Image 1 (cartoon, rainbow, N blue to C red):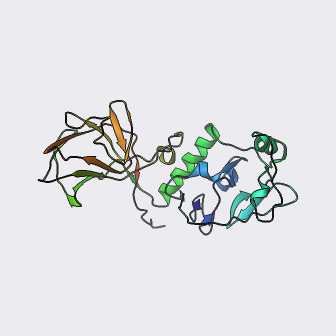
Image 2 (cartoon, rainbow, N blue to C red):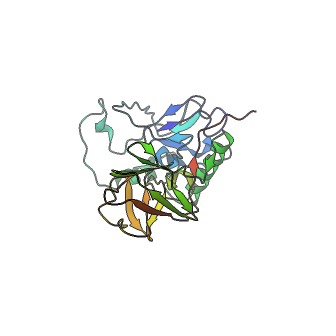
Length: 264
C-alpha cells in the first residue's frame, strides 16, 4: 500500500511511504486523531492511499522490546508485533501453529493501542482522509465518462433520457463499454463494498438478457434489475444491429479525477 506524501497532513508522511496491507497506522497521524491502530488496508481511498501491484516484494519490520509507535517518514506507525507469523520471515525461526484467534488475543494483551477494524471510529478516520484528499487537489465527479467502442473504434449512441440507443456497424462482434470506475469502500467512509464498479446497466429488450451469455467479461452479478460493469465490460452483439442500454440512476457514484495541485 502506498501512502502518498501529506495524505494525513503536512509532513505525514513527508515522502511516499509503502506499507504492507496489515501494517497499522496510529490515529494520531491525523490532528487530534484517536489513540487507535488501523491496518492501512482499511484506509485505502484510491487517491492518497492506494494499493499497487508488484511482481515481488520484501518486507522489513522493526521489532522493539515491546509493541510501540514509530515514525516512518514522519507518519506514526506500529512496530512489529509477533502474532504467530514470525516464521514467515527469513530470520524468524521455525513454524508455529496456534489457534486462529491467537492474533486478536495477542493484540488485546500486548498491543500498544486498540486495534480498529470497523465501526464509527474507522468511518470517522476514513472521512477525514477523504477530506484531506480533496484539500490536496483530488477532485471527484459523478460522470462515468462512458465510451462505447466496436473493434477499437468509437460508436456514438443516441440518448433519450437514461436510455442509449447504439446502432452497430456491419460485422460488429463485440461492444465495449468503457468508463471510469470506483470502489465504494474507497470513496464512501462507511461503505464496505470492495468491488470495482463502472456503470450500472439494464437492457430494455432482446437480444440481450441481463443474465444471458452475451454478457462477456467485465460484469458483476445481476442485482436489483441491473448489472454493474467493472469499467471495461464487453457485450456479444453478433446477432444485433441495435442495442438499447438503460443506465441505472445510482446516486452514490464518485469517480476520482486526476489530482490538480492547488495553490497555497
